[in-house]
Amino acid sequence: MAFNWPTFRTRALTAIVFVAVMLTGLFWNQWSFLVLFSVIHFGCWWEYFNLLEKINKVSYDVYVKMGFMLLGYGLMIWFCGDVYRIAGYGVKQNVFLPVSVAGFIMLVFGIFMSKKIKLKSFAAAFLGIIYISLSWGLLIDLYSSTIDIHLHDTMYVVGSTFIPIVIIASIWINDTMAYIVGSFIGRRPLSSISPKKTWEGTIGGVILAVGIVGWISPLILFQGDNDGYASRIAPVLAAIALVAAITGTLGDLLESKLKRMAGVKDSGSIMPGHGGFLDRFDSLLIAVPFVWVLLLVLKNMLTITTPTYSIPQ
Image (tube, rainbow, N blue to C red):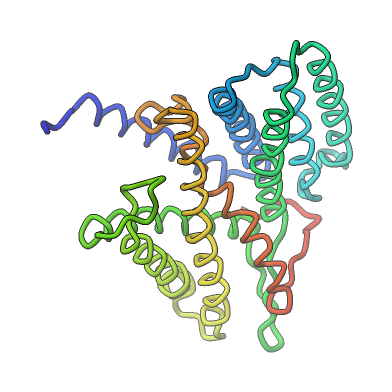
């Protein structure tokens, strides 16, 4: 097949813009992080409703859609920590309730406006609060926290952007390496849902993600460390990478299943050549809750604290 320059140019430009927006949102400050994932939250919800309408052969009233989205956004806002304060006013304390009430009112109004309500489609929409809003809320919670690692008589503090970056990097490395390994030695299909994925590629991607994030990255980030910080944090990073890689793959398969049921190739077209919001963040949606639980389980190794100061850049 001849190389298609227009398609390549479109995909390349979209990728550059996407990476620039993501890096700005992730690293600028806590507000850029919140705005970034607020946009992603509503984008994922809109595409999720489009998929549900195709799957269940229904049409959701716009008030029902907005009601669910605002209820979900209220849940996401509830996870905002003390770093999200302006002049002493916290986002959680002052925004959570009004947004949630507005969402509830719009949802009730939309139900009365709907000519017919199918319980199955309504339940599927409710699952979006867990699938989308809870995941982004937990990511906000991880961003709003710092990790204190105690080593001998010294306490090391890991910046708040660190955990989300580790999760995203683990998923990106896993996806990239799984594709490369699968292209060379992939033979056995992983699932009929996504025939291009192979067991060889999947296992190779997980192993390389754990190796790069858990072993190589600490050596690079903390080179010259004489206090054993790299060796202390390496098992934590490896565990995060392992959980993120495995559950991220499951998230990819879940979204592929939804698209297959809906009979569409992409969940949306917001990013030309790359699909929609769900196409880009399907892995992260499933990986985040599992990593959040992992860090909760590792509480004897880590101390999660919520800072009352601005996030250091």
